[in-house]
Image (tube, rainbow, N blue to C red):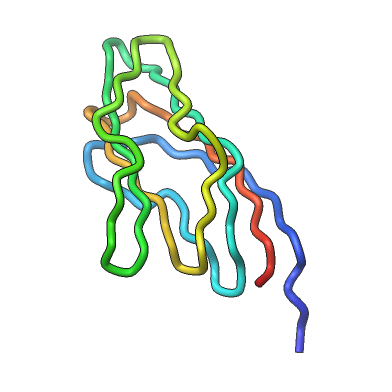
Length: 110
């Protein structure tokens, strides 16, 4: 039986849209730690976003309607966030292609 790597580091990037989208799902056999999250407004006006933690049928708002001024950025997590296997983060913005998200993630084998 193949062994899972103990730790995997990765970076994920997304262009945020007005349709809620899953931006990261903790894979089977791993617990994920979101080490850092950063949202940048590259659009021509102030934009808002909402970020959610999802487990099974439970959706928890991490931040709702946060405003990101033009040519500025927002750090939505004030610390680390642990996601168990199959937990996922989803996000929705107030405009298409005006906000970009970058996540720094550590996945550790269970």
